[in-house]
Length: 124
Image (cartoon, rainbow, N blue to C red; front, side, top):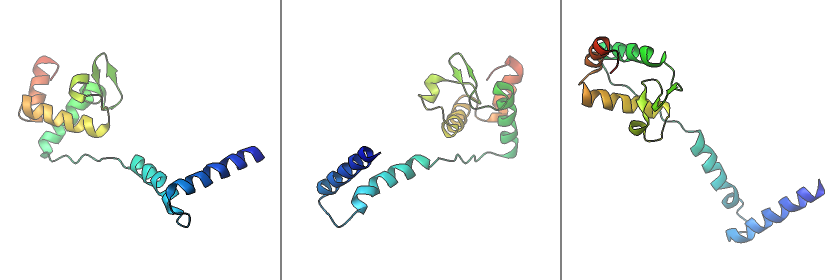
């Protein structure tokens, strides 16, 4: 136990000497608190769809994955079963929502149209 305390003190004093300011201890701890707070921030996706489009989007999400963001089916991932290529390695909820909205807008024009396509073909 004494060895751990001595090692911690040695590292702390080394950090003080390298910080350039022996009286200001915030230089040593500030970067760690900034890193910790940066990791805890999450993006929240705000959907700007009409009620009909939101309902169609939920309908598709339920049919594709039962609403789960973690479902995987081969190359298709998440709530809307988007391919890895569309998600570009970011499988977060935020990115899944944003990418699904972009995909549907570009391909079908609206979620209502995507739902019509899904009902006809069984996929969107």
